[in-house]
Length: 380
Image (cartoon, rainbow, N blue to C red):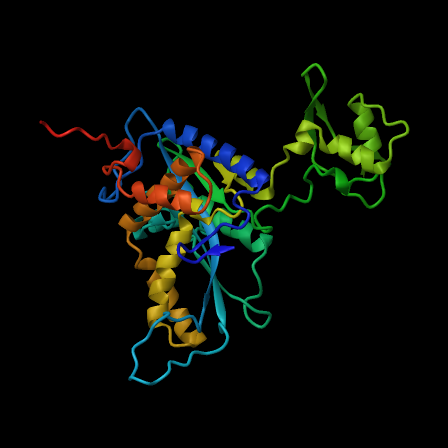
């Protein structure tokens, strides 16, 4: 269901598994942010450098969104008695993938930063934003391969812009399938046979804990005839001291999936960014309001609709200027609004009217909410 008065999807917000994940996500994010200096205010331009004795946290939010050639403003001027006839379909589309942060807006290098580091990294790209003309006869479609290439570009830029000595980087992604894909060698019991060999993939080596908590390294293959052979679930479980006699394939897969290393296996994007010393989180499902990048899309599309004239040629020309026109002070407000939603949810409010009303009260950190107002009796 869509709350048309607020423009917020609430369908699935209060599903028990979503609520449980949301509570953990918000608690972890609030705890993490409390360890760092407060974020900059909208008028702190440019962003002040972090204190000498403490790093600053930079939260980089990512998302993709489609711009359509036939999207237009909802209202238009016209002569009395005339009708404004719009094209029936949305028209050709261009998908945009972008990364934004609270400190500097869209993730990109300044001209000086780009020139300085280009000689050291010939593959360096100045901005993380990617535009893709969707369609079989155009650029194709967005998938995990394109996404991971985009993430690598963004990580290279972020490490230049936010050096490790001064900043800790947290990446936030939504739960799109292209974002949650596992690596080909990820620990996945459902990709394994019961017995060794066959067409099953060779999974990565791992470390597991026995019943006493002791850690043990385990290879997921053995060498035979000079080549690697995947072990299979039966051998892997028995090496861990788990009896497999009389167990079906489904039961073995269930037992192996419950092992901590299998249960906590990371996605491909997590493994990539964690290996670079960054942090990664996935936002709760159905919670667009917890991703500031969504407000960036709204502001950019509002500008694009004002200049696009129902053609792909026009759309190509207007997307970048429309997104670049979003001011840095606006990004600061986008992130502040995200924290307002987090605060409302952490107080136990449910999605929908209650949360929206609470966020209204949090519009300014200098404005007290209704619950903070103390009425002082007038003097007699």
